[in-house]
Structure formats: structure tokens, C-alpha cells
Length: 164
Image 1 (tube, helix red, strand yellow):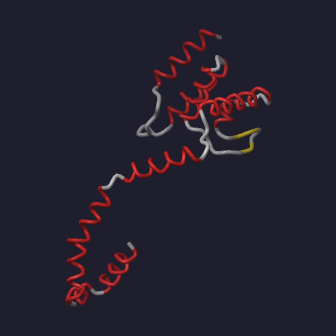
Image 2 (image 1 turned 180 degrees about the vertical axis):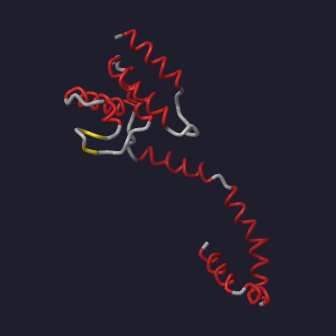
């Protein structure tokens, strides 16, 4: 890439002089035929699969968090919320007592906290976090891909409200 950038900068200074040099003309032609095929092959190559393979290999070496770890973290957050009587919206904004401590949570994050509460039969927190997910979902960009729908949230809310 650096070579291409250097050549491009040199050619851009005086295009006529650059292509009138037979060596430059040949190299430019070669780059746009033979070399370009290699570039196309690289671009067509599915680098995502290679990346995924590398990550998968590291899963056996490194210890990634499990579903149980995720549940434990969610339960710990609910305990903090109850112990310090933290407002769900403030917590989702990353604020504790008016001080910004972390980044904002997305509707996905709030939904997952609600789902973890639901799995633990903690319907009180399920309602709080599903309502927050619904609120955040309404002002996030529409083109954002979500793992859940408004209907999913309403289903969790209906059953959790009934169980309460």
C-alpha cells in the first residue's frame, strides 16, 4: 500500500511526465493488470472467516466469560442498584449519584440485564430494565440491528408484571 501511495504521489506531481517515461508506463500498466488481479483476490478473500478462526483458536487458550459469568455480573449490578437505591435510567446512562462513571448502555445492554433478571425469576428488575430497554430503543437509530424486538420486550414485561 505504501508503494502504491508513493507511486501515486509521484505521478500526481506531473502526470504527463510520469506516463511519458516508458518504465513508469510499463509499471503502471503492470499494476493495473497483473497486480490488480492480486488486489482483487485479496479484497474478495473472506477475511472475516480467518479472523473468526483466529478468535476461535484463542478461546481454547484464553478463558472467555461464560453465561454464568454474565449472570453473576447482572446479579451484582442488581444488588448495587438495590443497596444504593439507584435509578435505572441513571444507571443506564453510566451515572452514579450524578457523576458519570462509565459509558451509556444501549437498549441491547438494558434488554440483556432484563433478560438475566427474568432468568433468575427477579421480575421486579425485569420490569425496570425492560422498560429502560424500550425507552432507549425508541431513540436509537432505526437502522441499528437489534437482537430483539418491541414485541419481545412486551412479552417479558407482560409475564413479569403478572408474576409480580
